[in-house]
Image (cartoon, rainbow, N blue to C red; front, side, top):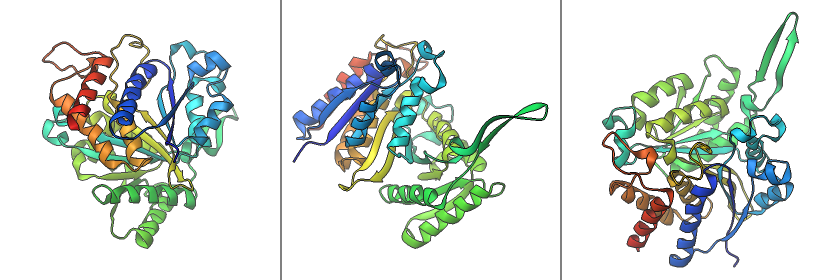
Length: 368
């Protein structure tokens, strides 16, 4: 049988640096765990614009559609700020999400014990935190029509439309319930059914999907504004949070900061299963391209490495190996290894991007 295929799009800024450490991890799995991948590299974002005049070449899009999973680093930077909106680096990422139909965005917020002091919340509130936000990614107010800035009388008006179909809600709800079955078996669905008709429909469809096919999963409903408050009051009450595109954008960033550093947070964007059972999938760290530290060896590669762990779990059904990698990261942090973004008040000397990769590889070796 052919090896599973990975398309690596390192992108801009610190993307190539952090993805370089992921490539070393991939090679380790091929050499030590009989898990070889067919890896291809290509361009996205500003790097693609510099070469092709577009943030995502059609050939690259075709490769992404054919790959078993796509790993992406980061896109963007001040060099491209003055480009027309249609060719900005971020348009490459949006095209990938849209044409791969990646409707389910998974954003874990996990607080490693060694980093519990980095959160702005009290240590006992966040220590051991492990929640997952499932955000609908391809519909809602970011895509609804009509939209735009129009002239009405003597002034302009900006319009965005919150729009969801039953089928769009149904499929992302199923994604959340299936995920919950592999975790703590609890889903909290968040919307604004008290003031928005789309929220009423969201709640009705989620409840119907639950009652028909997932009665074993505990389901609760919560207004999204209360959800934001509860995330900073008692975040460990949640397991899987299911929400729409707009609220998911806000709530996932709120949850991200509970952990103390964006450099620690991976994500997955999943589509419908292919004939082989694997979903269309794109994995990327939550952090941006950080152009201010690009090329200096200061970037934290852990979020990108944990994104590959998510690929092992959700695209390749290798949950045990994903756990092995996550535990290697946890051990390295417990042993005190810190990149610059993880340096606390106690000071010390940060290690480089490559040295963090070295430490994680050593921990993987020790796990054999």
